[in-house]
Length: 380
Image 1: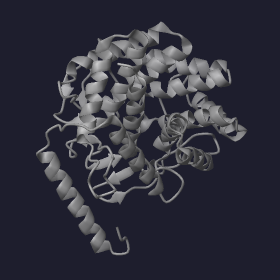
Image 2: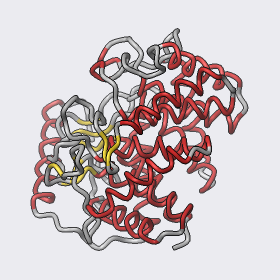
Image 3: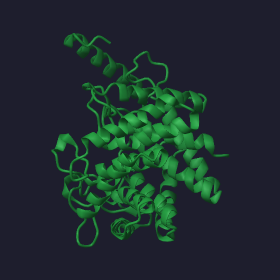
Image 4: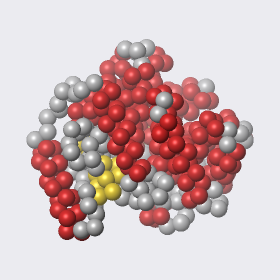
């Protein structure tokens, strides 16, 4: 698309918005194609998101309101791991090069104190953003042995320890300055760093946040798991918390965390409809909020269910995972001539749903790829 003409660009965005909105207004889940076709289309979209950034990070994603957005440090961190998995599992050398490029860029934008900030909110480090970048840095260090990646990872981990309060919890340097249960995902990465470079403080802080997350759970559902106090969390937030607990349980061989993750995963299953739709938000009592689907959450929950299926052999997990991914596949447009959207995953279905409204955020496609890779590797 030519970009030297602002009126033409606006017309193009208008046509994209109109066409997508009309399709979603009359949407009915469609028959899906082979998993490989959906996977390949998603991989190509994620690579375009990387190419569309003005630097070496991955663009936040494509918005029908303004086109491709600036790079997003937080999600670039864990997208690096997805590219690494593609490189290893599919012999994708291009994905390998992207992994290294992204992680070298993350080191460049890392604050002197080891934290990662989001320029939209200033220069102060943010716990969650730092944790997601830590994930990519640890993984690429494990694969390359490059000490630069380990040094950056340890700096990030040390900052996460320093900003914890007297009880070891993250109650500041967080989104809106409040504690969030979904920071269990950060605790997972701090504990992963602890297994690579043991530190009693890293383990103490990681466990303190996981223990608090468990204390906020009742009947599988969480208090204080949303972005904003008092809001019903998105399935995206809930899955962040459950994944952090699940992976930490595996990592530390701690049944308490595994039990909490299992309780949350089981609580969600009755809300998966026959076609794989899951409501986009749930309150702390497990009541659905909204009539849209947070597609990112569908993908994340599928990953959790597939991991539990591999661990337990309980078919209920596999069936929930497959249905939830098939629903996302049915919303993915792999035929449109508009490369900004082809293969990408929307934030919400319909696209005007509450979660990242009118956008294709990069992490939705990232978790979709992760889910499909795991599905392909999981015997049914």
